[in-house]
Length: 293
Image 1: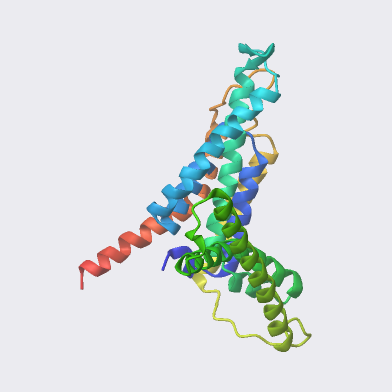
Image 2: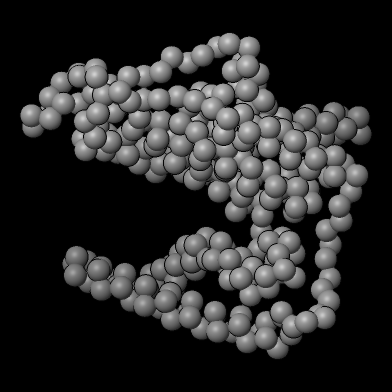
């Protein structure tokens, strides 16, 4: 089990909420690069290197596509590199597209880490009493896509085993895929109805209903949560106050390396790589304990 999996759900939720906010609040290249790299490294530690490579194989082309889109439609910036259809392509527009795309991808990977750590039962544990209906809908929505992918694969393999894909023509293959999608949609609707009936029968959301929870806030959880709130809030405050401001247009701002900016970068970097450091520490400790057996 991963270190973040063993944390109290509130601690993990606080970290991811703050880190995603930090990633979205700034256009500073240093902060974006730190967020992007830390999200990928932490995601790889959670899902494994092979799944990370598969994910990057899909996301890197998307990153390149998003980066190339901005200079095509945005022509601001003073450094003109060349003309495309009589429209200037500027260095500022290209760099803005690159780092804006990295910001989007970093948020995507932080949400991927979130969905891996914050399972539906943890989310319902946190918000089930405050917003019972909304928390149930959100938790089901978060788990919907991976569940849908697994179910699609199962139906697809079952259809192949039954010989449904025996036709070699393109029309037959398209028709078979539509049949799989139709079965998947029907199954999803039936499953959602069964889930709603089951939760209603159990009295979910009723006033005074008690629920069993296996999560307990330990002293180490409280200390770590306080540190996350302190460092994460400090990072957001530094960003909001303009300590690490950076402008792409009309010209690129210089990246300041004065004492205050260095402190801000250090705090943000430490906060971004905190999960990775904790996971590495836990793995090293576990191997040391195994070697002593």
